[in-house]
Picture 1: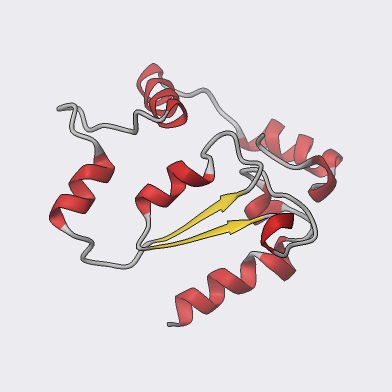
Picture 2: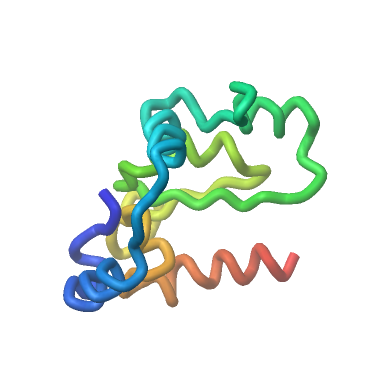
Length: 123
């Protein structure tokens, strides 16, 4: 799910979606479909980005975040792209489960996800 309904003010989210969402190219839709299906996003040459990052080594830290209820980029998919990985949801100590967008936009994000991001950036 894009958002966990109990973690978002739906009227505000509807307005945001109406203003911020825009048409996406067919290539991007195909890439996202591959990511969701578990095949992973590829370069134009067909190489998998996560394999290239692992092969070349991570020359920089990457914090991968996932919501426990995120169907757009599930936790197991997000984990492939980070040097450090964090899942947010009830099973991990948060007040609610998180979808995709509410990791940043959710009612509880300022108290639950933002501090984790800020702490990571400070390191």
